Image (tube, rainbow, N blue to C red):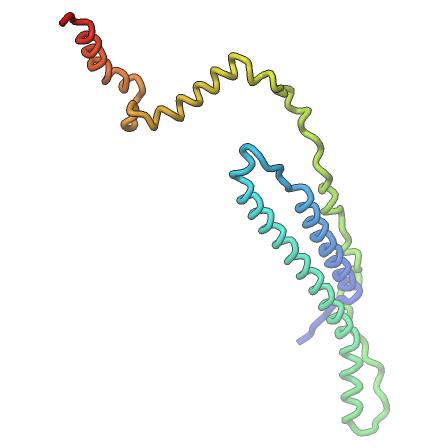
Length: 201
């Protein structure tokens, strides 16, 4: 059984994990800084769920950063062990064997020498897209002013919204029927009432 470890190439992995640790910390900082919602209006109902989602993502990024940092340290220890294991084994064997001429110094097979630590080099920066969001208000040309509250269109729209809220609570709404059928069902009774009121006594 042979076991080969390319130590020169593997030495590039701890710095790679260190960079991922830093990138994940940066991502968490970016997330917390740029996901704040200003309270008010329709934001209030979705704010608790939004905060929960942000907290879940932040926890994931924090945990991943911790794992990357711990793995980098463990890998450094493993590299040190790989680099000295043959020498330690030879020294233990020499101490137990009779005094014979010293054998050649043991060598460690690094495996494929064509691979170096550059195999773990980054081809780009993962945190490069994490730029501060720009002001997007210019994308919306319509900016209503306080005077719009007094416009006929606004009043009509508010009246329609008000009626749609009142109708389901009124006697006119008895189930999943149309409003025309609702009024038509009450029209004969209304006509009868009007006729009796106009009939001379």
